[in-house]
Length: 268
Ligand SMILES: C[S@@+](CC[C@H](N)C(=O)[O-])C[C@H]1O[C@@H](n2cnc3c(N)ncnc32)[C@H](O)[C@@H]1O
Image (cartoon, rainbow, N blue to C red; front, side, top):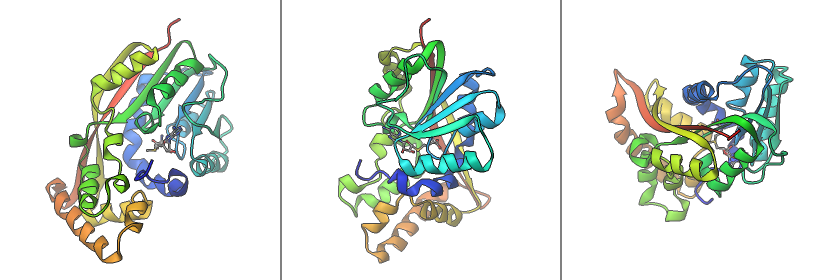
């Protein structure tokens, strides 16, 4: 989708965000309730999370991670090989067409993927199809736009400068941010005993500069930066710095973001 980062190109740089997202992985792992010996699928695994954490923590799990972006999958597989993790493998695969037999996995997990799929319902139906009867799914999606300060800053800073289709895709990122919407979609996909929960994760940075340097280095806004003349980039930085002021705590930047965890079962 236009405006969305080129996930394949940002691959390794995406790791700069992983420490901030780690608590979300822990929330998902808690809901998954994995047991030794199980097969687990991580859909839209990016550079390998939460698949790698699962594989490290439970050496007897068999973990597969899939993502539509080749660069992401390569980065994830490289990490697994470097660490000598033989119980996790990564493959390029769109969530809407999972290349696995029915009833292959005991658990399916997805962190910050579902709302980005071209067809979120289809992706969830595929997760259900590959899940064994009695298996569990756990997904995390971002909250609604009002609850995502940093995404709003970016959107607002570019809004007056770029055509709508080139803006960071805040609507899409926040499209399942209402817990009712995620509950409905998971139920529509066919999951049983669906539950959803609002949660909050905080980004912690030493300063606003540290935050913006991470945004630049991770290239998540590379498309937007490239579309603008250089002199506007400093103005954007200044505008974001101003918007971020209210989240300074003793000079450190602490930005709460809401996310929704949804979990459920396959009948059987
Ligand atoms: C925000 S990243 C999250 C990555 C990882 N799960 C994490 O939390 O660190 C979103 C990922 O979703 C992937 N993605 C988007 N649409 C997809 C689709 N239809 N099928 C598979 N992966 C998709 C992107 O390539 C990207 O790696």
